[in-house]
Length: 350
View 1 (cartoon, one colour):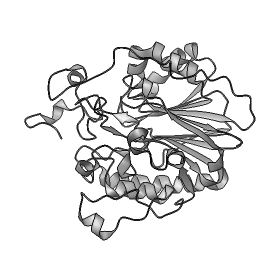
View 2 (cartoon, rainbow, N blue to C red):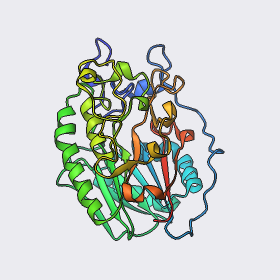
View 3 (cartoon, rainbow, N blue to C red):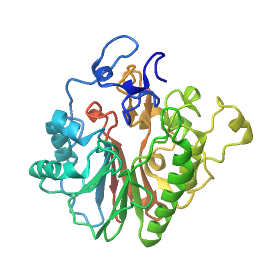
View 4 (cartoon, helix red, strand yellow):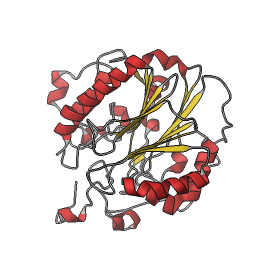
């Protein structure tokens, strides 16, 4: 939570969270003072990422998802790193969240991207409520059959989908419930049910790959120090976790005993099975992985060094294509260019 005496205006609206609670100021991101420690690596080594050749195998698809924490900032500070990463990863589709781009900025950014990445076409969904906030985009090598921007449930640019012959890819930046959980009701009672209905209806047409920063740690193992966070910070409230469990299933519903005591483990909330017919791809391949699934670490309080992380970024696929999941990889080498790391899904035999 914010330090005592800090004025509300000092915490920028929409800023990135620390322990999933407080948004850091620009000063905090580079500060090395005790108690507000910020660590961003000075160099990056991508040697551990093997260069992926263009896929020529029918039915094969590689998708990367990445919360960039501001695309303009990423391109100003880490453009060569970003291009090097994409050149090695070579995904067929890249889904981006938190672009923080307004519609009048996309033309210039698209020109820059196309010069460096001519093999892709970019599709934008920008926030119309305020500048420099939220936003999603998809880069695709193949022209989709259709591009869907769901403005009826979202005016913050949080949802964009592209349709291919065999699959629909849904990219989302799910709303954060707020530092003081002031948006928890909106998130869990408005956004989640409306999006769930959209997902189910899309799935009736074609198999779904849903990805992005979903702003929820589903299981106790998906966040460090879960006892201190449960029902206290956004992303780890019972209602958020239960709503996700409706979609992908879990280890069973939260019991009244567990609900009444915050420090009791809740496991992965959700009815046993595959929920509404969808599968959490990482968890499908890694049933009990402990903390190795984290995709977000705050810049502050030495969170990365202490591995005080969160699993917030996901691939969720229609159950009927779960056997097509070949691999889900985290690219922790990229941490520091954003406070999230890319997550990569490879599908075969679609």
